[in-house]
Amino acid sequence: MLSILRACHIGPTSAVTLISFLLASSLWWEGPALVIAFGIFLGQLLVGFTNDLYDYQDDLKHNRTDKPLVSGKITTAQLTRAIKIVTPLAILVNLFGPLGVNGGLIYLLGVGLGISYNFYFKFTLLSPLPYALAFAALVAAIVVATDRTPPLWLLISAACLGVAAHFANVIKDINEDLKSEIIGLPQKLGKKTSRVIIAILLIGTTLLLNSVTPSPVLLSIGLVGAGITIFASDKLIFKVLMIAVIVDLILLLNAADSQIGSLVV
Image (cartoon, rainbow, N blue to C red; front, side, top):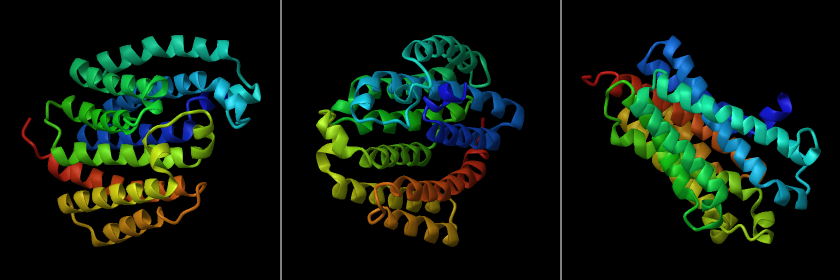
């Protein structure tokens, strides 16, 4: 069971699920928020599972033994079976849970975009597009489910964080990707330019969220963390990114509580 979960990229999946729960909790109460988070989790499982299944041969070639398929801890048949089980569950929980049909469809669209990245967009210069739209769809789904209109600052912030995560996640594998002819936008631009783009996206997001709910301390930490991404090593850049994202998340949740929560339903 644990090996199957590792195939979903448990770190990012857990982070997205937690963020979803916290945002839902700021707009609902904990009961519906837990169900929403579970539905989000199921969708992220599908994105991660399909990614590992599709990348299996390439991961073998590069000896990525941290992947459970490559290490032999699970088989492709087991992972395929897990996808078949999770898919209907993800549809049912998201469409018939607290998100409702409208919110559920928006989130499932984001899941579809994540899967489309695995099979198509990762090989094109449009590789950031699914990340931007999927992250925006995630937060939009939760807000729409409460019969509110997602504010533009929320959608832009989520999209920017999604694209920054895409660039940061790719940097560590750029050399291997190029050998496998996986040429998305980060691979095309190279590490140095990708680092600058990550920093710009994080700085812009931090400034935008701070303009909604000002916090000098969080602003300073967020800007420093964003700047460090330019110089951090390939292995550390994603961790530094997470520091900046945590700051932005706090700002986002504060803004959601003070701004979205006060909107008239």
